Structures are given as structure tokens and as C-alpha cells.
Image (cartoon, rainbow, N blue to C red; front, side, top):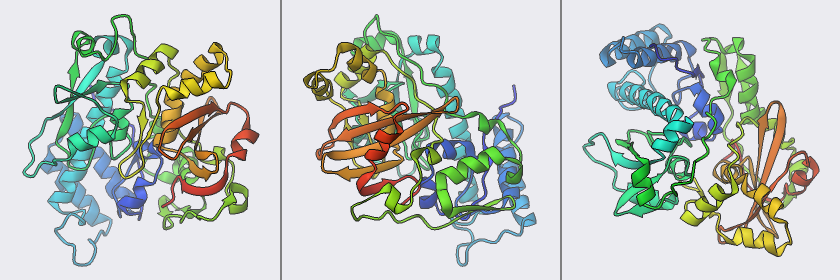
Length: 409
């Protein structure tokens, strides 16, 4: 069966660092390469990746066809960089593009299959293992695993497939491999009997699958961006006024510098959170599944180079101290994956006298679903608040010192 690659060519003059500021929802939809601002070579890269995945094109044929497309588009490497990794015609750069994208597609395909309830019941966990030899392998994976909230089982890096560890581990914000550029690490399934033996879940427990992360807009696979108004709107939401389309080419302004003085979103000229809400809603889980995740020590949200924020049992104690009913506490626990998503990829982070606030808004069936997470100075979550339709309450937290904004440096 031919592989349907749900990614859209996104030409850009942005650097890798600027592209990393894109929300994960956009990065997953778009096919791009840093500093490649011509759509035709990207279209050919997409065709080549699909051909490799379908078994109809070899790596050497793909490199040949992409080079021809680059030549036809008038591509020139940066001055003094011919033949290096910064040259899109070089074998090193083309192999990186092709291998990363084919592995990403296969990783997504396996993840999609794993989120079937029957598959998740039979194979609920996976182990991070080396699947490809490297001349100079990274030696930091165990450290990264621990920083991502991962636990070791006899020295093995194992976690449930729904654990936030996998997103925390990834440089790209994806719960599937590859987890970094040029990485030789992958995953191996762990069956239910072994997962139960390791204490990852009980015989009665059934994990809640995550919805697949590609929004419907990713189904439009047309080469001209001007023919994709829905994607254009999503990209403009993600980048704000710094982005503009010129024909079928996206131009990006330099990253926005986040102002540090104490002020408010309104005074800074930022619109409502919904103006950048492009992330699908995570799954709602049973309270017992949320409690098990907290007890495992893996209820952690982080990203490479960012602070680690963890959810511990003191959160539920905080709600009891507030006098919340069991029904209200369960309603909060239902949304633990929403809270983790807000920590992992917030739209805004505000420092206030009452703590650090992580704000995020999802969109489902055209309606906003907000989540606000409050953490103390040690990176421990105090509480999270599902905003629902309470836009005014969410806006009241957009004051203080703006530490980070989606799409900003």
C-alpha cells in the first residue's frame, strides 16, 4: 500500500533555531529544511521521501532528483559552505533530510498503530534502545532520559507508551523517534506481562490512547501554499505579525524578543490566547490513570534546554486543603495530559507573585479549551485549572513578567 505522507511543503528562510520555535502542531504538518525558501525542491523532497517509504525510489535516486530540483530552482549554497552540511546539494545534508523524514514518517506510523486500544493493551510500554550504529554515539541519552522524568528498570530505559517522557525526550516535541538529529536511538515494544512485572501498570489497568496529532488541515497536500488558506491561517497564528506570505513563500521575521519588565499582555499588544491556538486537545484520562502516572514519578513536563516542572501527590493534597469535592478533584485529574501539554509547550509563561503560570489553549470542534498550570519556584506544580469558557479568568493570569511566548526567543 502506498504511504500517504501527511506533510505540506513549507519554504522558509528561517534558521533551525527559529524553526524550533514553531508550535509542534505546525512542525508536524510542515515539510521544511532550514534556509530553504524555494517550494519546488521541497515538493521534490516530499516526493522522494514518499518514494523511499513506498519502496519505489532508492536513496541515490532521491538525492539525484532533489539536486535536479535545486538546480532548476536556481539554488546556491551559502558563501563558503559548498559541500558542507549547510549545502542542500551535499550528500551529508540530503542524507540527513531523507533519513530524518523517513524515520519520522515510520515513527509516526508506528505511534498511530500503537494508539489502537487493543495494541496498547497488548504492548503498553516500550524501551529506548540503540537501533543504528553511530561512529561517535551520543553518551547523554541516559542523562536526557532522567531529565525527561524517565525511570530506569535494571538499567533499561522503559516507559509506558502514553508517558510524557517520550515528548520530553524529543528535540522535536514528538512522542515517536527519531528524538534528535542524526540519532541512532529507537524503541522496542514491551509486552503487557513484562510491563506488569516491572510495575508499570496493574492487570486491571487499561491505558487511554492519545488522539493522533495531525489536524485535518494536514490532509491538503498541494505544492502551492497560496492554495492552502487553512494552513496559511494556522502558520500566521503560530508566528503572529512577524510572518507574511509572498506568493507561495513564507517569510519569517527574526524571533520576537520577549519583554521582561512587569506588565500585562494587553499592554504588550498581545491578542487573546485563542489567536495562536492550533494544538489538538489531548486525551481525557480516568482519575486512577492520572494518579498512577503521578505515583510513577513520570508526570514531568520539560523540553531540551528548558526547566523541568513536575506534578506530585501534593497537588491532590492542595485540592483537598482547598475543600474541593472528590468529584471536582476527579475532574481536574481527568485533564492531567492537558496540564502536561501546557508545561511542555506553553503559549505563554508568566512569572507572578503567586508562582509561575503556564497558559495554553486547545481547540476542539471550533471551541476553545483552556488550561492554566501554576508552579512554585522549585518547579513543583501547585494546581492546574481547566479554563473552559472562563476567558476572563485566563486573561487575569496574563500579567507580571512574561518569561516566554510561543514563537519567541
